Length: 280
Image (tube, rainbow, N blue to C red; front, side, top):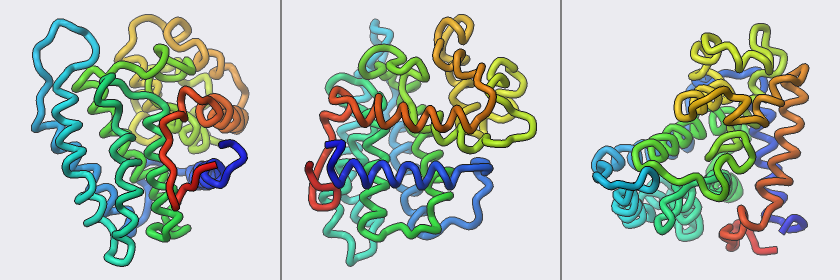
């Protein structure tokens, strides 16, 4: 897999968006292209459906079974949502592309979510780029507007339905669920005047910048959902805060993602292949 075309396509796409994030804030993008706007509209529709399927009362802390009802609704509507999002000449590709978006939303059977699901969303965006739905100029908006909308949806699902973290809890000791916003978030903060890696220990700074920078959003989320000091519940994030610069953090995050997420069979074993992202 790591020697194949699909791996290279997803890696190159991730790195191009990582570069597009540098020195930029969430929400500071110019007018969105119709393509980016249409993906955001689909994500907002899915988010609206979460409001229509409230969690049920049950004794288990994790894994609210109402998630299965929401997932069934998403699955039933997904092909139409993706097909209508695409221009007519690209609509035949929806049969390959829709599964990436559906399976970026978690696992219906296990009622869980993890970095493999997040990677499915990256595959969804990569596949759309491969068929020419996006253009190179969309990179910044994809990273800081489209992915932000996806992250908001993922957080909503995680909190509403108490999704189990896939794999071990805090698999990479970054976040129980996400990885990409740490990578792109560290790129955003390179050479930032006020925020340093050690700034995660200042709750005021974290709160002030959580809606502008992915990294601060992720740290705020950890502090909201986990008890105890960050050195205890997220030791790797705590260790990273000792690094001298965001560029070092970002370089390490990129290497770690390709080794520990895309390079690990348990995470990537459910990856879909087709004519757009071909099998190895």
